[in-house]
Image (cartoon, rainbow, N blue to C red; front, top):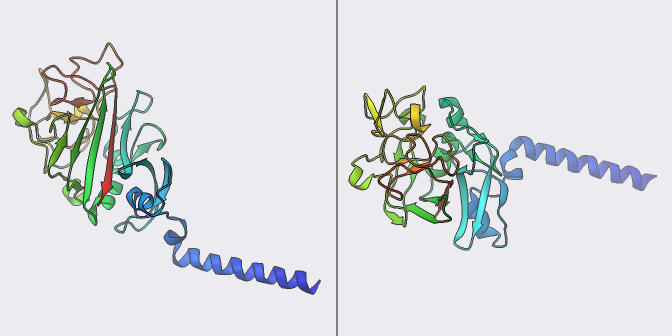
Amino acid sequence: MKMLIGLCGLILVLLSSVTAQLQKHPVDVFSQGSDCTEIKRRLPESRSGVYMIHPAASRIPFKVFCEMRPDGGWTVIQRRTGDKVSFRRNWASYEAGFGQLTGDHWLGLEKIHWLTRSKRTTLRVDLWDHEGGTAYAEYKNFNLGNRNTAYELHVGRYSGTAGDAIRGEKYEMDQNGFGFSTSDRDHDDCDPCISGKITVSECAQSDGGWWFSRCGSAALNGDYHESGDHIGMKSGLHWRTWKKPTPYSAKATRMMIKSE
């Protein structure tokens, strides 16, 4: 009986200690790393899936989907594979994030800002077409400004096979350095805006939330278009340096980041 009482007392002490640690350092107990890159570096055998992370700039931990590849752990910030999740959302939704991490989703502007604030980060955009082809674009030194800058986009050197659509190449629609726009928060650089042959008051009306200049050649959050209805659409999943000159809506897209 004394042994049982002693064991119960020990358990109570341990529970009390754990509770105190949770109250004092809740993030340290639950987070598995500051980002997916760190998790993969610590645990090379880690598989792709949902993990809890705690970026240094964030006060709280949050879950992300980690794409664990031979070249490191990548934190997925956007995924599109169909039309089950609507990307016609307002500013509050894009700031907080929406969708399911294991499926189509947008991680959230504030979380992306936290992830890129204190580390040098590479952005990778993966694209799938309706004919079985793929392409990618990578940008060094990717980061977002804070809420006061409307999460202004900054990217560095480009490499890849899809073309530098963010800077627009010959389209002269450089989106680098612009804030994020939604239908209820306009930060583009045109009035009126021309989307294809359509005149609109703002780019986000036809292409969903994005970093627009003058409805530039990159916009991956527009309406989803199935095969057979994906060419010539004014709204869609556009990366126009990849499929040109006619607007082409991709079958699937993925945006993810990796820290150095």
